[in-house]
Length: 280
Image 1: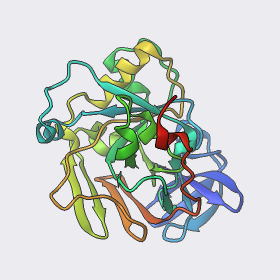
Image 2: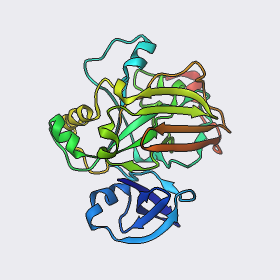
Image 3: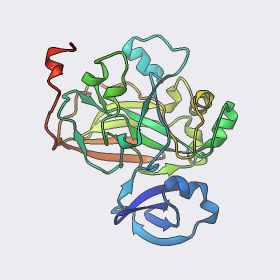
């Protein structure tokens, strides 16, 4: 089944997506709708083409992201195969909707998109086996980890280049695992103004979604609505840095596409004076 979070006026509402129909239900969001699907009541309907899709999980307790998890990406970068997953975190303020405009931060001129399969957790989970972890995955969606490379590589920690406000679209829909064969072999891509910048398949993942969820649950109690981004495939020769006015399309086979126009940052470039002189 397919669920969405729809912005209806000033509120968010869960919805069941059935082809061209988006049926609003008495749930707070897509995750809530998926978890309570047997007890839902229909409360309205909107057209799929004009619906205002919001991020499928509006306020996750945890957003964990995996780096270097596609074999082809590792080969492209000339990196050795890691023994353990490489993690960093995001925050709810980093997320945005799958149709929202993204303001490219004025403090960076090296913003690059990263198409990702995102896992949505549906149950509290702690020290889970891979089988238990797989059972706790309520669905999958598309995400894009827009990364500010100049900020990411300022230090050995990537966090500051990964968490700019409203820079990570999540959606458009949450798709239950049975609909996509547990995401074993889904084509994933990113295009910019129709030009392919990334292309890959989840069959190329080094650590599977269930393995990642199990591993995360070893050091963190996962909660319903938590999000895990599973990594990004390599780039094509056409990939470059984003500029305002482009449209980024992030697609995952069987799930759909996030379509995000980029715009100029309305905020000024106000870097602190000490950046010029360095620390005292």
